[in-house]
Length: 295
Ligand SMILES: [Fe+2]
Image: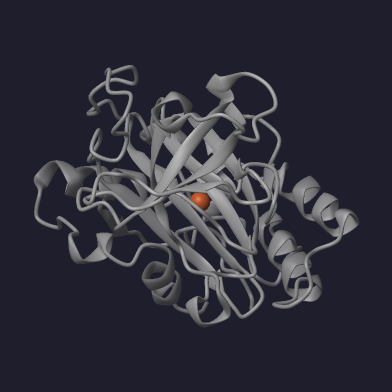
């Protein structure tokens, strides 16, 4: 299994410098979360037996995804149909031990500043990274947030393994509609349209976002303790123009003017401003405890 450090670095460049390793509660959560499921030496699982579900997903990705060609509709369907069969135990998560309620509650009011709203530790588990794709998991405590960020030139398949996750996602309005702000402390803002605003509760089908559609710019908020298995293709790679950028959103009315290219309800549009990786977003790295994946 290759290192996940590249993904960490590229996807979330700053949070990992702010890991909080010594908090007892976090440590307890970490230990509970990644306790082994039924894949110890007493398990009936053997690498020489029939392939595990996650191995089948991996093989399909490895044999078909490339760093330069976007996956076909047929290939995406093939991968999602396999991801749809994956549950927590297939990747070493023991569902009954994943109760966690240390969050602040899902509906804490703060409309404009989603970035500053939550600061709960999220655990990242890298399964594999190659030139063609990244396979990884994010494990969210209740109310934790991955703030609004993008996946430029990428396709991302996301399977909620357990729990409930609120997804709010946007796509850019094209051609770009960009406005400078009169506030010197604020950069330009760009118009985006709402694409997804829903809660995904396991078991549910795999979600897919595309380079231009499907909600490429998204925010995750854990309604309950939950986990997501992600496949990103191709991976983040800054030198190839695939850098992860974080955004702050403003209501459409904040910068409304005549002639804006809106089509539909004003509340479906937002203005997005690029921001630095939020200081209060921090993650910790977890160990993969599922069946071995043969690379
Ligand atoms: Fe994302």
